[in-house]
Length: 122
Ligand code: HEC
Image 1 (cartoon, protein in one colour):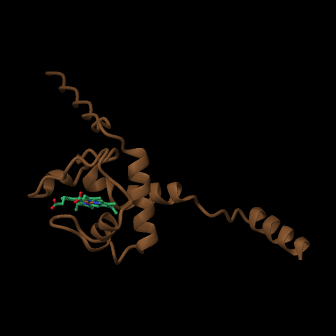
Image 2 (image 1 turned 120 degrees about the vertical axis):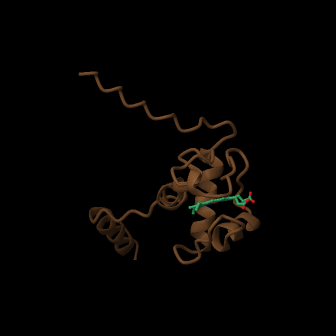
């Protein structure tokens, strides 16, 4: 029995099958679904944020993996879209756990891109 378990673990390892941690999964989901509006540090300055009529709030330091927030992520709230179709409740909790750990209060805003250099006059 023990031998089988050990063999299973070895095979899983050899195939590179490794379950991501909650944090890794949360980060992946955040980057895929949330940075467009919330920005890389949850400061509310993602590239899509300016296109919304409603400003995206700065969430750094405010997020908890609470049932209330899980429900907002799954079913939406106001201008925040729901992600029920993209992932399930445990993943909603993981993404919030990631935000709570990674986006501390006062996270720096996304730096402004360098302005294009002025073209040289002919
Ligand atoms: C289309 C833009 C958009 C995307 C994409 C988006 N959000 Fe939001 N989010 C918002 C806006 C706007 C609000 C503020 C809602 C309001 O006050 O109407 C918000 C609010 C929130 C809140 C705060 C709720 C509260 O009441 O404090 C959380 C948490 C949140 N979003 C998490 C996420 C997560 C996690 C993702 C990715 C899975 C995500 N959002 C993707 C726009 C977006």
